[in-house]
Length: 232
Length: 232
Image 1 (tube, each protein chain N blue to C red):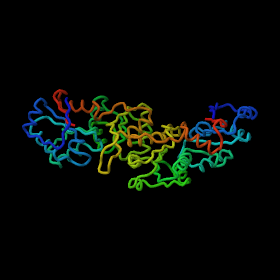
Image 2 (cartoon, chains in turn red, cyan):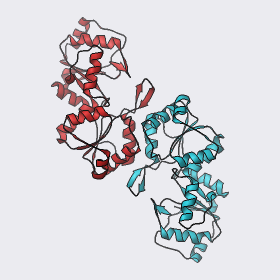
Image 3 (cartoon, one colour):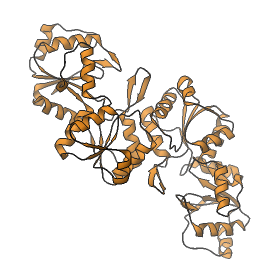
Image 4 (cartoon, each protein chain N blue to C red):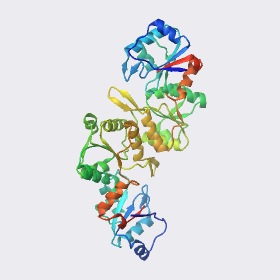
């Protein structure tokens, strides 16, 4: 699994792309900062990806953003003119759901995160419980992602469950992310608050640059790491 | 300024207290963990303090809790049978207000904290601004204390102002505190989130165990540190 930084502004010819990607059976493309920056798509990157698709390689679009579901991303990429399948999308929420399902089978999960994360976890059979239920009876997993509904009582509930033994899982640890409003707090900020209150660092951080999301991506693509090029 | 841990369960005689406190003109008493634990007052400590008051020493009751105003504490201590004056109470909110007033004169202040903190800051002439006003025009100071109304957009607003140059002041950095509901997130948890998002540690942490609150306490008592015993 080699890694290559995209050089924005340069659009390669199909022939150049063919030669460059010859050794690889699959490509992992980072959506954040490659296909778009914040909400703004990068036209050159979209053109390059359209060409890449004609090479017949397996492709997987990866993002640390857990607030949207894969379904949301499928729609968004299609709206940008890319014919993608939902199975070609891996966000940190889906990766977290796959990891928990494969490693632990399932469990009662308290989510500090948005709708897209809940959708992915429930999609893999995890039992997402309410704050009240978690406060009263604890949880097997506390999953923390970016959450614009983050508040004091979510921290208190998460810390309580973690101190009682729940596994502490972060979808990703990006401290901030760029948006049209400027830089905003990312999942890493929520994770820092809950870590401080619970006196414990996350047991698992799933997203980039951690290895978990890449391992799950390779499994999903059914390829070995030598066969894949990461563009991000 | 010497320090002495209170030994709970032992109630000294007045004669013993007189001899022990002979060298000191003033006493600083920690409310948290000495006079009460969480919301529960400690009867033996209250009895000892009543005796101490007959020695004619200057006294100052100190707490890191910024959610209540000094007025609230005055009432609470009077309800427990201690005849205290508001000038004998120093909470981290009041200490923060005095520090900002004395060191900087005043300034536009965005508060991540509760009503008691706002009351103390305004009481010293600081201009407390709304979240919207801070988002649009920044602030001179971002003051962060314990806040049960803590949420995502407060973090976003604080981080934005701090990244634009506002001074970052923490009333205290206690990660958690004991309550009747069990351990809850303290001001240090709010501080950790805002530090992570803003990429900056607080410029000043006012409360115990930092030196600021003690320096402000000595000034308030008009005593030198050799003249004061800290019981906490």
